[in-house]
Length: 255
Image (cartoon, rainbow, N blue to C red; front, side, top):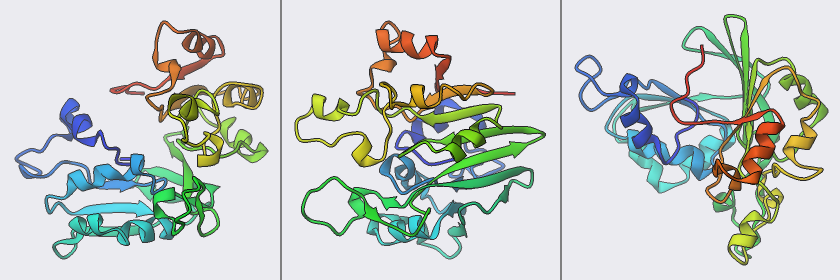
């Protein structure tokens, strides 16, 4: 599994393949490991739902592991010996998942989440972490097919475009439609770019910046509940579909 969202309980309930069984144990699931792309709460809170003494392998960079181990909540994951096994991710160094999926981590950001910062001035900026370790993307390869998973994009570089163009599908940060989306909803909240997310719209938005990427299937994921593209009748939804993009949905399966 890639990341463990706060919705993990509902995701497990909705997919019989993830249910506990007599084979796996009535208090366990077939989930053997989780790859974390960052320490953002959206990516890690679901780990706490897998705390019933089930052995679990977690793949993460040293920076992400350090953030989680410093938080007392995550002590729930090491109440018994060998409950948690960490496998360190090194940016740009490939590793195997399940013996058959080649996973290559792409360094995206050096900035840790605000909750992990020692700053007390209320500034919604991220604290610097080890180079390339705070937020990563993943390229997954198996049986001649490639998928890129980049749920949080602080910038789009030529190198990233080149990677996207080698993939069959790309899952891209669709958190916000506009830079001021949060502050328009609630006064005093930060801009999208200041918390590590390129907005979808505008001349410097994701659609425009990735217009030249034409080979893969392009899909927005990690969509915030303020994002108007969630309205299937809205103009924003029509714009992304006319631009050749899709919106990721629960339960999708690709063959």
